Length: 381
Image (cartoon, rainbow, N blue to C red; front, side, top):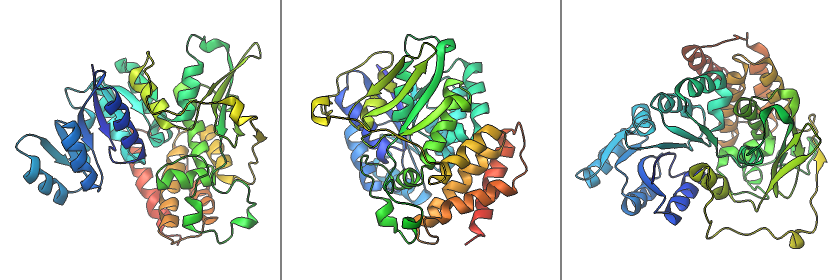
């Protein structure tokens, strides 16, 4: 039995993680969760899974739920609550499915507590990959990828030697605006941006898909997860989202992981690793029905955010922290209709250009740069 702490239980990845746990009660037990503001769904999770520890975002919801369930369940809230869930003594695996850089500190604490990390939070490695991977090595902790692209690479590497890897190839659907020129994007609405053609995801990551920043963050994350130089990580446009990513080896062989677009496959593999389990409600891939797969070269002028991410990753140091914080602030502004879609990459680039890079930032410095960058972005609109 594996005991699961789940951060972000009411979000898109969180609810799909619950589905995996629900399907395999003999394998997994949910012992702790953190949630945001969806208290109705939280009540349903408490009733069904009976976790021992629940952390909520604000104190009012903490008081409310504690009054309802406090006789049998432990409650907490805020940043301290996240840390409690991340390090809950009974848990053996932490699933980090929260959105944004808020996931960094709990992950580091969980690593120090010896928990296996199932990581769905890109920003943890983008913001402080050097600190996270160093801590994982120091404490002998495994970091298992939950993103479909990184899970695909991880699966392709099973049984292979790291020294024989020549290139990682990350696939990208292109998002909701993949067939539009930059001129076509003038005046696009939030609603249009949230209409992803292949995947059902949360609002922030759907916008990141539309700007291609999600691929940029994934490139930086892949660099840290697999210890691969940026010049050996490519992105290719693949509309069908059938091949989730590929690995090319020094003998020119390429291995790919294929499947229907379903995040539960990657989530379940991270939880069950090194074994595979049935996915009862999963849709099987029928290549005869698909007929053909399409691939296109990535246009870094059209998808400027992807270029910015590569540049920040290659420079390294504190610059990826700025990239991530600026992106989060700019996407939030777009979702709240304070800026236009094309202003997202403009604001990010301004934040990157003004930053004086610190080569080996410590945790306090990263936190300071993160906050300062968000404040700066919010002065630009």
